Image (cartoon, rainbow, N blue to C red):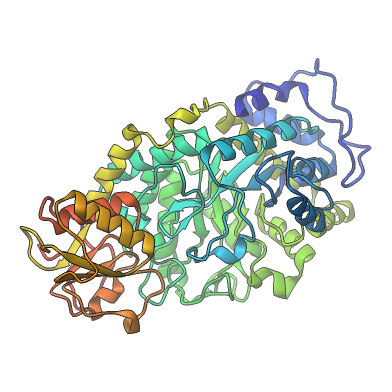
Length: 556
């Protein structure tokens, strides 16, 4: 458990020499060596005594194959051996002296699936077993501090852990609800459950301000198009996660919302003036920083007004001059996945790793080749290109963050997916349902209804919810409900009495149905809230957080 890991810190501080890259951990300093009680001072003391190999390890956050830290199948061992030269997740931690790990889920319905070549999350019990084993391996390292274990639990289209946990509506639904208190309460629920599973970081929330339908990679992952609204929601999410002991991560700095290129495929260019960039894209990050955000993820984005031609991930002007010096961010900066083309194709894996740290990042998320990244950083330290003082500053921030988060008690697994957690999520989902067109009172459909479009899971969830609200469903129903889903275009629209946007609502501007609604996501709570509105048992109080051509923010 993380608490155990924190207690061991005082006894596990290493000497700063005599270790070979990738070799066995060196001896620790005597347990009698006193360390400061203050987490920041303690982290600085630990960082100053680490060897280069152990310091570099703290900067690395890969993924691993396997659903258990020490026991894996032959095929999983083969995958780990091919990528890391050892068989198990625990052995990967020991070999590279890792400071963090990312839990991943590979799924066709995830727009960021290309950065997740495997899955190591199934049930809550399995995840807790895995994270406990990973932390046990970390306590055996010379640094003796917890791992940073995180995942992309944004909710909505990018949700890694989906089974056996409370699922929140997508971020855009919270933007439609427009009630930061609901956002804070829901983030606290998600954070408490992640903490119970043994995680201590979440690579969320998205602080991106979305511009419109052309931005397909962000879409409903954003709270909306108004930087003030987005900033209020971001700050609320940060407070909720913090209360649960989870390090939230604002992403993707300096803002992925005003782009029409997916950074998983190419380098998006932010063509705004610096004034516009600061007022529209950077403003929500400032709100999150003011709320105490402990981490920010740098994006593979070309901010032309600041450092043209250079991905923000590798830009000293963006990360150090702007984020650190101008905005005053003192927390941990972590890169977006280092497997993505904007950094890997042009710069090469080793050089990209060095440039990212020199630019101001503290941690590298999922380097394409962990060994290459490690050796490149070690060589840069040895040559003097990467000052050890800068590495120590990063390691200090990283360790201090982990000590602070590890001090929060870990809830029991039995607290995951409980009724008390579902209640505030249900309130948020209901508050976000938006009626763009149609009657403001009374039932919007009468049975039997036929449901088409969207995902099979969304259709099934809506059908069950409608049946619970007294509306029968049938493949040959007299009323037709059509769900638009992620990636749909105008060509996918079908004739229906009701069209519902279960992702970004922009397609509703082209729909011809007499009733137009949006849930912005397919979480079970959102489908239940939609059914209540359709059955006339609830109002649709949401206000569109983005501009939809030809439609008002609400019909009522």
